[in-house]
Length: 252
Image (tube, rainbow, N blue to C red; front, side, top):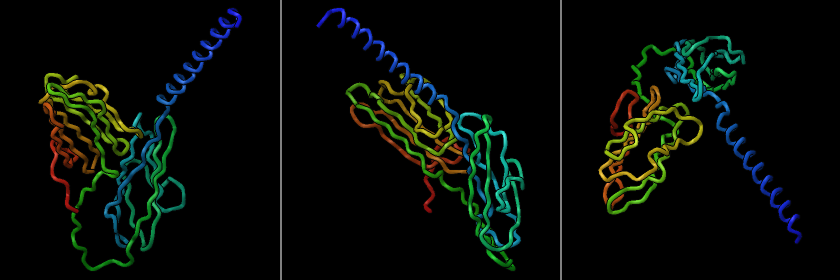
């Protein structure tokens, strides 16, 4: 084969590979900077009202990569979000199935709508027993995954990944001389969260704590104590929103 042709072909091939690499990098950069949709979760209190009882609606709306600029409610099921504005609303309903919806909009104009059916019991009882307040678990419940290897004198963490509902606050605490940081808190987006700073060699005796919480929900607490020559001692518990230590999970 002619050497000039070989040289020309090699230059073209190198240019094509470089162009493909630039395209992949640009696509990855665009994906990383894409605006994430806000979340429009909300709760109704009481969740099973009777006819004429006032129901309080509380928004858990949030934006994982910005802030909300509007929260609008449709409380009469007509499709118009003009019945109330802000993080809370209230209304009494007649008996039957009632459609309620919340629309949240972020600072880049992206909106998310969440709808739910409220089952309103007909009639009004003479006496209503006090309803106990039960704090629900985060759903889906958070998952903390750790992978690594253990040697005689050290522990190598290869993966520390957390999956949790969007806008949950994830805090990782590290105690020990080999820790790269003492505390790190991040807001959960729509993808799994990876703590790359901890994917390294850590000394036995190091303690890692992962706290996952969200307002008015029971979250997750995971504690790992790294041990020499053995897998880490792991403890998984539930975590109340305002707590710093885990507790036993509710039985029902």
